Image (cartoon, rainbow, N blue to C red):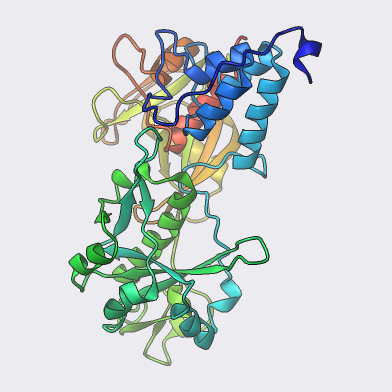
Length: 423
């Protein structure tokens, strides 16, 4: 749609200079960012520059609107298209991709049993390795401080890790990065445990590289690499923890590119069929936003381990033979005393500390009386939508806030706020 059709003259303000170090996501007292103002005024040049600078398209203002919502509401056709295209490029399947869930590698699971193929790939010039020491990833700080993310995973060549590989450490085949174009090469990627080696050698071949604590520092990885980190760390953690057969106690050996452990006792029952003693396990858990019967309030809780003034969705692990819906109902009632009826799925998030899968849901309560389980929770309260917006934008008068955007709880709460926004 053209600006002449809209009846609005597009502002052609020059974009920021390349040397600018302005904080692109800074807010005013109403929670508005530069991107929101550019969306309101239909300034496509500024929008493109802000997107290039790494601004957050998902931030909401004090009324729960994103820049995309604002452009649509004010009928800024060109701005709305640019923002829509950007969001769709980030999420081509048009589904929410929570942090740690975006992994651009083709896992090529059919290649894991081909030992000769794996060995040949390890030595290829275009192969890259992700290094860990004591489950800490080796990363390189990003030079552009105006961007939202602080680290990228260090991509090492075979010659960089050759000395480490001589001690036969755990190595995990992560997958293949597919590159388009006639001259582009696919990059096979592995994770390698360098705990037993001299980590200073890695720093020599990758100046500026450093090992970071997985939590919370890994939450500052570029999102496109956070999923690779999640796969690699979860696998290495499993290989470290399960060195012995859970069935008979015998030693196990690593197989299938690090994706299986085989008991050395040939007649062990774990060598027959599929068992989680042989393959890595993922522990499913539910995390849910409970909405009041009238749809105007949400139930948030505080665990005793939470930072001061942080509130979040209720959560808990699934039990064997239990459905997602029944887990939600049981956990909500156990923790808060509130009874739940309808349960709807929202989205999921791998959580590699060590290997959980968070199943996000929105649940409708059939009661509002709260009786907190003091063994699990410090408190649980109902919050109205305006308060949730204040917590999202760090504007709450009591200093209350919710988990950061990398957490699925943040995304569930924000989606409910946006869905109920009165534009």
